[in-house]
Length: 290
Image (cartoon, rainbow, N blue to C red):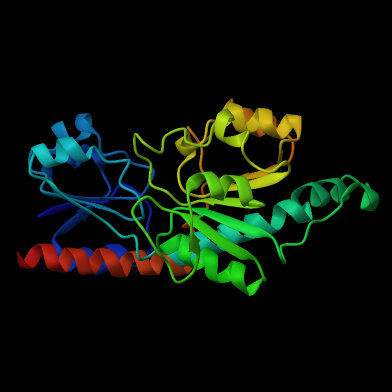
């Protein structure tokens, strides 16, 4: 069995996968592959699947499967798995770090200090204590964010179409999350329903000066609308780790004020890469026993 792994994982993973088959990172051998293991870089779309006649199994190391053509894979009887349990801690820590960075003006203050400026009077901080955090989605990552928010003395509310109650947050409507939250953290999969859900109309219902944190998918927001809300002062800040396109060349967020941006670092921890490896090895073990 040929296992194609074109994306980067922990250095020890190739050796751990060796007992299951011949591992290659060469996309030129796609036509031989029975298993493809990817992260967010490689899209397993119809064109790729059509070039892999022997393909039976795809593993996405990460939370979402929007980089995989699920309908076409199903039509071709190709099994698809992801590893949502691996990345929760890593992404939650980044989301919380971004939430701290915005009201503390860490990015701007660091940049101006290195320019030789001392702008102490220009930056008024906002404390997290006593503020309301609204979570859109209450899955594994959001639950980890909620636990950290409570440690900081924040009130936590959440909206999730598929969850009626939670032990880590008060479940409310999306309208209440947007209207009542000082910070809104997005943790929803990208679907036809969630694409562009944070747009001008919904931003208009938010508190003036509210902050948005997006570590799920870039297409969940309308970048142009968020950039305009930052320019007008309606939003107090936006922190994004994900974008329409990556790298986000030409994105209006790159020049928007009070935007803190990171290059899709959510799952990029040494610890998470090890957890991803554990999950992938377990899934391969299960697959080969069938």
